[in-house]
Length: 144
Image: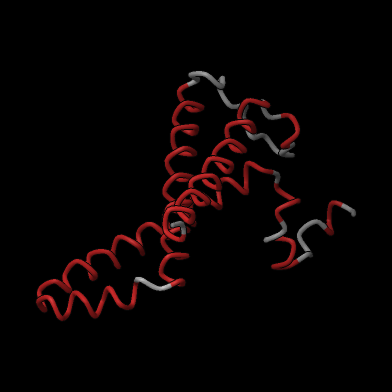
């Protein structure tokens, strides 16, 4: 691809994760998990306020949430929470130069392959820990 054709891929090129590397994927997952946790927080406030309707209102809302879809949603919330926490700690350590070293300057042209391998290990470990926590949450909710 010629350099002048680089920006002619449209939306498909913008959302292609192979174009950016794992750092960009971690950035997008961090933002999406933050928005998802905000939505969960607002929903949780609404759920908790249903107790004002008394025991009947509380039981009606629990009937909606104690379904397979509700449990799957909670497993996703668990994964978002763990990923957001672990990746946030990784970012704080990286910016502080603790444990993973200081990140290099993202000078143009950006070459993700030149990044510190410890940063990538931190990203992959955040994804793996989130997946493990999600599977554990599913096992607890669906297990016997």
